Image (cartoon, rainbow over all chains, first blue to last red; front, side):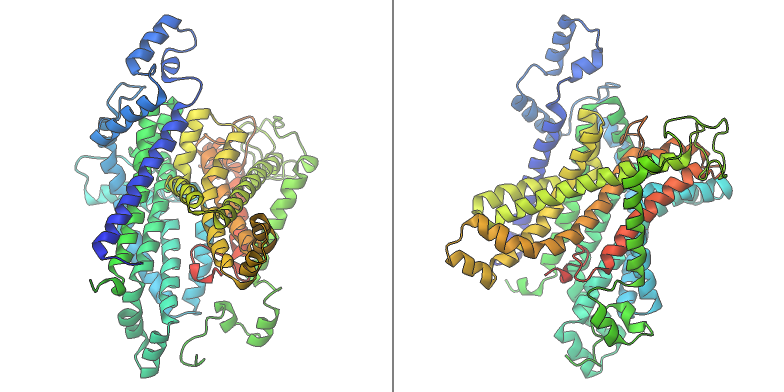
Length: 318
Length: 301
């Protein structure tokens, strides 16, 4: 636990980079150590051996696995992770089109869920044992346990099929009005917020309560400091690290949830692209998408780590 | 600590319950809260369903027994019929068996692998620890659904593959908890004493450390079971999980999704089945004394 802040952060970044490298090895070995290869998949069962061999040479499949891995990794790093097997488009272009849509969905969800969760968690911690606190505990336990697809399908049934208030599919328009945006995005965003918010609120509550149980918070209480001041001025600054962790961990739920939600609402994002790639066995697209999601997870964890390093006053001296 | 200045860290439900706090405290090691009892009842119910399923089905789950599709509940078909006119009661009984059985097996495999690796790391040198931790840290970075998509795309979906995928995906989490438990235990006096006594490392791990890890690992096992149920149902809902003609609860929802508009029991009941199973597990674990929820790391000891 020694070292200055920059060196600690640099170390975290190095570990994250190493982990991402390991992830790329895992993803590559799972997707390329299978018996049938891409050439076979493209040409079908009746392909002549000569055609197969030619296509393999063209795709570089005749080279040893390690060379193919390095080639793929190089492409990934320079932004050219190969071509899609199903429509021949560069994977970079396919993902480049869809990444902003996924980020928009994630951004909207974050913008709704983080303030809501922080407020709920802090209030629940302030009034421990109140009806709000108990309601939050029960709702959290239930929400975490309900799959996203149930929330999403129930939402579609009630608000789109029965009430016609919202759109069941999310169409991406070039210049949507606020009304269109609300109609199209409410259901997917709410479905994603469901589990994420509950989880985040509960972890925030735990972090704040943890601080309120410390001797310094007790000292402040004995001095006669009011509850809200004790929570906001005394406890909260010390809970920034754990809360940042809670937010990052909960948001990483979004990555998995996006798979289901983008599929249900036919949303043109990266997760939907990945599900389609599974059906088409489009390995280059699949590999690139898996790397993006894993990098997203690592990025979130890294940000949380850096936040807790920066918010630790013991490290601030140097 | 002065009790009146700072609210005591007692369970919140006790503070407001009409019963005397002391009586509750005395019983708290055996008695579950009301929510915990509801959870336990739900879990026991689904375990029994999963066990007895094949012997109590009224019809063969694959047989088309009615000409009416998406039939409502009736005496002849207590839970209605599905999109082909098959008996929903039979299909849910067998579907629950798939969901519960697969998730139990995968959670068991993940918890066992995590515990063994955690103990291994605690008793071996730095090198083993570095290698095992790095690889498992990498796996934890691949979100479980993404990992499952990669596995299904590479090897095709089958029951053994789903089991393996869920087990691999949830091993790192179990490993992290097992390792932190083992590291805490390895500095206790009795483990140190066993070392000084000259016990072999295997003895230290299995006889001295393992018995003290079982309790928190069981709570963790329950959570892992719940997450695996969610993962597998999600995959089946996407059509990438258990393949027809077999069907788990997630596949049942997918098959019958066209009945959603008319509110057919065929799509609503499997959804309720999944929700009661997972909420039940969650309520039960939350009520356990000394639960090891990852969300509240303060409680892990």
